Structure formats: C-alpha cells, structure tokens
Length: 297
Length: 297
Image 1 (cartoon, each protein chain N blue to C red):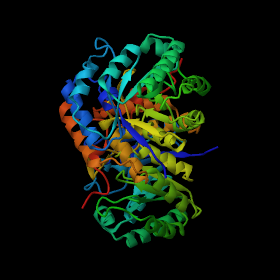
Image 2: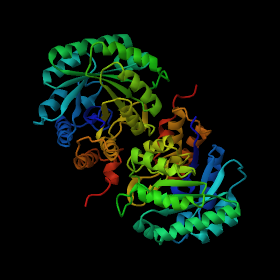
Image 3: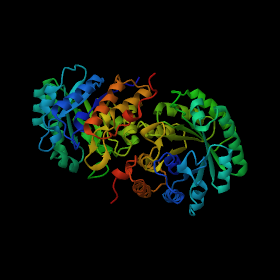
Image 4: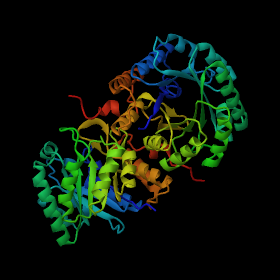
C-alpha cells in the first residue's frame, strides 16, 4: 500500500506570482478550506520581504486569521533566519526553507551562493529541531535551471547529502521551471531516498510533464508531494506558462489508481470554483471543469 | 531501447469538434506540416457524414490537396463500409475504424449495437487486407463511458479478442473522455498486448492524466501513441475541458526520457504557433508557449 502525504502550496507558491493580490483574510480562508477538504499539510504563508513579493505581505495576519483547524500541519516558507524568527513567533508547525541548487539561480532568487544557502539550511533545520518545529528543505531547480540549463543529478545529491546531515523532516526536490521528465525524477528521487530521510517532490506542469513526474517520484520512494489547488501558480521564468500541478487533478489520478489520499474531492472542486470566481479567470486545474468520474448517483 | 510510433490525429480528432471549420486546403497544409516535422503517422481525414460533422467535410479534397510527402503513413477514419469505400478511392495508406465498447456510447455515436460494430470492424479489417491497406481498430471509451460509467477491463478484452482474430495492424485503446488513470491503462494495455498484435493508446488530457497514461501504456507494451498537435481537440461530453494530449508535449516528455521519436520539435512548435493564429486562441499544448529545454545555444 502506497502512502503519500499531499501538501497544498497554493496559499504560498500558488499566489506569490499572481497578478491579483489577495488580502490576508482571504488567504486565511483558503487555508481553512484546504484544511476542511482534508489536506494533511498546507504551505500557508511566506515570510519574505513584502517589498519584493507584495502578494505575500501580511504573513502574520494570515496565520492569526486562520480559525481553529486542528487537522493539517501548517507550514510557512522562510528564506533566511529573519524569516524563520517571524515564522517561529506565529506558532506554525513547520518551516520550509528553499534554495536553488545552481549558483545563478540562487544568486538571483536568494542573493546568496549555494554554499551559503546550504549553511543556512543547516542552521535553520537545527534551530527548528531545538524549537520543536518540523523542517523541510526544498532544493529548487533540481532538474534544470533557467540560467544554467541542465543540472547534474550528482550535484543535487551532493547538496542533499549536506542537508541530510542535519536530519530535516523532508528533502523536497523541486522542478521549479517544469522541465523534468519522469525517468530523471525517478532516478534522482531514489538516490535521495537512499539518504534515509523522507523525500518530497514539487512539480510544475509548465510542459505537461508534472503529473507523470509526480507519479514517478511516488513510485521511486517519495512520500510527500506538493500540489496547488486549481493549479494556481505560474512560473516566473515562463510568463505564459502554467505552474504547479493541481491538487484536485493529482488526487483524482492517485485515487483512481487506488492510492488513498483521505482528501474530499467535492470540497477541492468547490474551492477551485471559489478561487476561479475570486481571481476571475479559468484556472489550470482541469477537474473542477471536467468533473470527477464516475459521476455520483 | 523503447520504440514508439506517434500518430498525429489533429487533422481529424483535433479539428472535428472545433468551433472553427477549416477549409480542406488548410487541413491539407496541416498534414503537410506534420509530415515535414517527421510524424511517422497522421490521421488526416474522416469519412463521416458532413451533415453530422461539418468540420470533416471534403475529406477527398483534403487528401487531393496534400502535396507530395512520402514519409508518413496517412490514415483516415471510417465508421462504416461506405466510409471505407470513400477512403479506398482516395489512395490513403490506412483505415482507422473506431467504435465504442459500451452499448449506450456506441448507439449514440455509431447508431449501432456493439456486436454490430465488432462485425463491421472484422469486415473492414478483412477488406483492408484484401485491398492492401493497413487497418487500425480503435476501441472508444475503453476506460470509462460518459453514459454507463465504469467499463470492465474483461469486457474490453473480450471485444479486443474478437477484433484480434482478423489481425488488424493495431488495436488502439482510447480514453475518449479522459477518465483513465495510469494503473488501469498499464494493466489493460498489457492484457491486450498478449493477444499478439500491436497495441496503441489514445489519451485525452481532460483531467490532466493523459501524459501519465501515455507513459503507462508505453511501459506496458503499447507501440503506437496518438496525440494531437497543440493539444487540439475537445471532449464532446465535457464542453469546458481540454482534449487530446499535445504531440509536442508528448515528444518533449519522451525525448527527455531518452526515448527517440525522430520528430523535429522546432517544426512542431512552429505548427502550433501557426494553428494558434489560425484558430485565434491559446491552445492546450504548453510547450509552444513555454519553450523547449534546454534552450538552444
């Protein structure tokens, strides 16, 4: 029996590039809706500089506005120790730290060398353990870089080994620009899984490979998969392209393949319909338009 | 080394539900462009009643307008013997006969009982062999029916066995409404492959499972995959939903996985751009918007 934990990243990765900025109260409602649908993990906020990412402003207000929903692990993204301290003060359950595995990508996104970010990941993971928080480390651009092109699996593995030493709760391989294909995903996932810590996958559907990649990760030992309700989220390096795989489409694929997720599809679809009205556009997720199958009696 | 033959069905399945009706000369140009890109097989036309499907009117004019392109096998869809006779007169290389595996679906689409269509498939396959034509038989709604719901694999296998007796060049399993998931696709594909004839897969991406399904079919013994340039094609039973998997996105996935297709990606992308202008809308295929990877120097 395959076991998989889905983490909905829509409130963070889904909305952070959106043309429409949603108020903290609305982002809190999104988190509540995802919790009500049974998502076991939710990336709720990002503790980044609001001057750089206005869509993510008011992380503390979002967390404060979330009503009681005891089910899911609620996570936030922090890209440095200042962000970590803000996150710690909110009472979230998990910190997610992310950095790019290539120098150019990481310099442009984090303003740091890869080596500096590895060190920061190790410090934050250690602090999180001391503070009783969960910690996930995401390796961005793990299957290809918009600036440097191909990324060698050995290079990613070497970085993952350094991260694994501080025993994060998961190492997440992110195909940030949606260029991976299933064999590379399966191969790298297996190798990272051998390090002995939970491995996650974060796939963008920019070139329609995202769902096949998620399945390949799962079949190769990943136990956490990120997805975003409605397929919210773009790719900042491909302005016309779609972003994250859609949570409801992934749940459909998994459940129809006999892999239980414990997630309520009807509530996911309702949430996508709500978001589609709110953002006033058709979302990339397809299930909320096509309907599930077989139809209910 | 995995070997796969891609058949582009855009000129037929892609355009048959489109709001915009393209003239025969334009449809012939589409076939020529696909041939120039190196597609080994193209479903060029449909010999159906133009009163029912005006988009497919003028099949003979389309075939006559196709300039010399010796590479691909050029196929046409015929749903009865009258259609077969029209096809035979055009000099196409292959007849594709299709019918639904459930009574309600087949009655609504073909106006025939499944048993009558099995008999027709057998007659047409036999005639095609006698006439020196290739023949492919597509089993529609093989993974789910919009009217009857779930379709049992044993039922599809029993139909395929009757079709296999007349030795078609391929039996194609079609997920006409885009409800299949990879495990079911892999399982049924393996069972049909055991009949000893080439097996194909035809997947719609209506719920974002299409590419994972294509890969599952390939890994389970399918040697032919249908796809449609730009992801052209809708699902008549889900008006807001997308249709066929996009040829260029599938080629990207396969090539990046190390599976050679012999198809020129740049020409595919050019063709999708051309179609997007012609149809005046964004197509479902994503690669022509996101670009291939790694980018060329």
